[in-house]
Image (cartoon, rainbow, N blue to C red):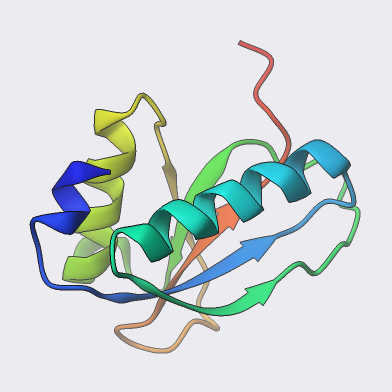
Length: 109
């Protein structure tokens, strides 16, 4: 994630939602890569809950998608550059200006 290293370090909250060894490993690798880029990872919330339907892919969760925080934009760009296409999810319970990176099951594509 060269792009992240070229910018000031940021803080990110990462959440992995599924009780799955592959997802846990990918989340740990992602957290490691973010750390190597100088980012601080808060609350690696591996809240291993099952959802129906299963949560799939990588996403950025925000309160207002029209006001995406700059660090979230930076991370989205860095992920896109390595072929990971995060989706954007809205959640009214997220604080203004806050955001999270979520990791779900691997996409079937």
